[in-house]
Length: 258
Ligand SMILES: NC(=O)c1ccc[n+]([C@@H]2O[C@H](COP(=O)([O-])OP(=O)(O)OC[C@H]3O[C@@H](n4cnc5c(N)ncnc54)[C@H](OP(=O)(O)O)[C@@H]3O)[C@@H](O)[C@H]2O)c1
Image (tube, rainbow, N blue to C red; front, side, top):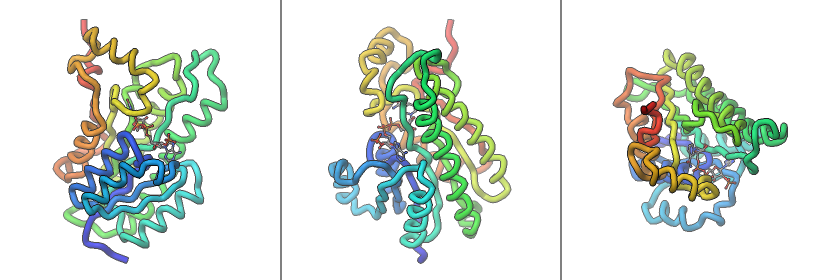
């Protein structure tokens, strides 16, 4: 089935950054398809916001780590909307327990890398195979945005598995950008710093203190909307002569200072 509106897939879109991205793209007229482990009922208030905007969305409860769920979700998206114009790889987790790299367990490594990197890698592979069947529209086929992290290059020895998963995602961005440039699919990456979501609740005081002490040139928490606005720019088509690029969205935290 075809649909004149463009369609965006957002993983992990029931809350936090993913939900802000979904809402932003819905406000720009996209059909939005969300794959998330949570039950929609648990985030009713968020989806009421999409309903109030008269947004067209499809919600599928499943994990990016589950091959059958990935395939069933994509089939449902294609059946409902037709082409997939945007993929935002946002689903991600922090370790359940922060522990020194000398104490890190294989279970925690497998969980975090399995969701943040392996899940994103193979879900992207599946979606790209669909995108490659699609015609060019306005000079391009589709756009992919990976929600990575400053942790791709900053060492945090109490959550090394998270850092390694995001460093791997940074290479994933380059690999897909390289492979897909000639296919009309550009691939971008956003590296958020500290964003005010449920994920950072456990370290709220630590980051509040750092912000107060001036660690961040722009002295405030980032918001999910900051990330959603950047996604909006990447999918706008106004950056058509660049691919494989990342954007630090971290209040200037990446600047080495003396
Ligand atoms: N917040 C920050 O400061 C920050 C900074 C840098 C990068 N990021 C990245 O930004 C992304 C979003 O983070 P956030 O802060 O919005 O986190 P969040 O509030 O925890 O939201 C993440 C969403 O992804 C879902 N999810 C988890 N595992 C999944 C899976 N296997 N399949 C599908 N969905 C899954 C989560 O479900 P559950 O409710 O079950 O967890 C949740 O709905 C992540 O990739 C994160 O690493 C965040």
